[in-house]
Amino acid sequence: MKNTKQSLVFTSFGHFANDGNFLLFPTLIAYYKVIPHVNIAFLGVMAIIYNLLSGLLGPSIGKLADRIDRDGALIFLGIILEGTSAIIFGVAFVFHAYANYIILVASVLLGVGQAFYHPIGASILAFTYGKMDSSSAMGINGSFGSLGRALIPSLLVYSILFLGKFYGLVAIAVYTFIAALIIFWGLSFFRRSKYITIDSKKHGKKTEEGKASDAEYNKYGKFLYILTAIVFIRSFFLLGTVTFTPDYFDNIFHSKVIMGDIVTISFLGAVFGQPYFGKIVKDYGGKFTIAVTTVASTVFFALMLLTDNVYLVTVIYLLYATFAFTSFPVLLGYVAQTIPQKFSSRSNALVWSFGNIVGGAIGIAIVTLLLYVHVALYTSFVIMLVFSVISIIMLPLLPSKGNQKGTAA
Image (tube, rainbow, N blue to C red; front, side):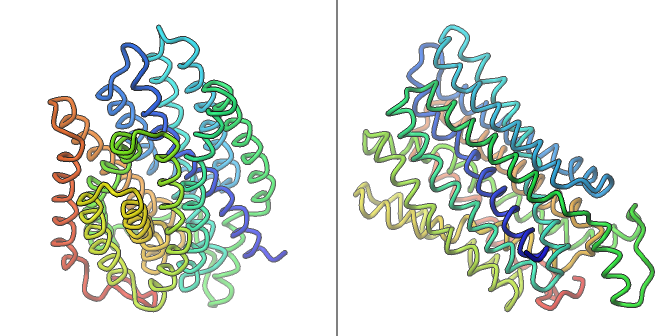
């Protein structure tokens, strides 16, 4: 197997495992809220904590990855932490009196674990595929992340149905541990220093230094900061709503099975959407693709709120997810085209971890605060749509020369 194919296969499996666990806690909210002394506002705070940890730690982990050149081991560590958090989440169902403390510990572990995959997985693909082909590879890779987000909620719901709450989560954890070991083995070949050396020889240049120059990195600051700001505002809406969407479905359809099935069916749209939009980034550029996906996701989410018909909700949310959850190939593919490889992990971490995740944590905080002051979840979702509209208004701020051919913005 060629290294490009091997990197795609095992980073895709890593994306599947990592993003499946992303919806672990939102799905559990519908179960935790009926435990005595556990309320929806507290659960919202826990969602803020794990998203903030993921976002704030991401840049440091990105810098560490750039420095130590052990990407596979770092992804392994992150997924192991996520598996451990699943077991601890299960313990909360056994010891109800200590449920709040147990959920807090599990949320911290989940947040730390979630900080690893995205900046590092994108960097591996940027190195092995190069600037122009990496966005297409990220689209395929991202589709497996979406598949994980689609399948794990239903898998969790049915595991709890047949095995009980604690053992259902233990089953999820065992699968996660096995996945982590397979990923560690599959990515053991990768050393980014080898690709930097090959690329330098190919272009008749000196081998790039392992330690990137901050002065050189700062030349790309305008592009990165504008993109991060837009992603930051947009993520208020995306993560602020997706965290509570399973609970919203449970409220209007009064069935956790229907809730899990709608989430699973809907996120299958992004499985096909991510490769498609990764190719659009390659052909038409990141600015165009970000505009299309942002506008379409805003429209479809608004339409979803206008109906409580289970079939219409499923179809519209499917279309919403197809456009909304394409950030991996669209954002990081755009970054890969524009930023030199040696800055890949720290650039990915700024856009993804700070822009996407920290912004999302603030969005979750806004919805949690609205729920705390007794604003209905439906009304909260309507309010969050405003932030998506603001991000659309900000799109023209992206540099007009942002490219589709890999030249710097």
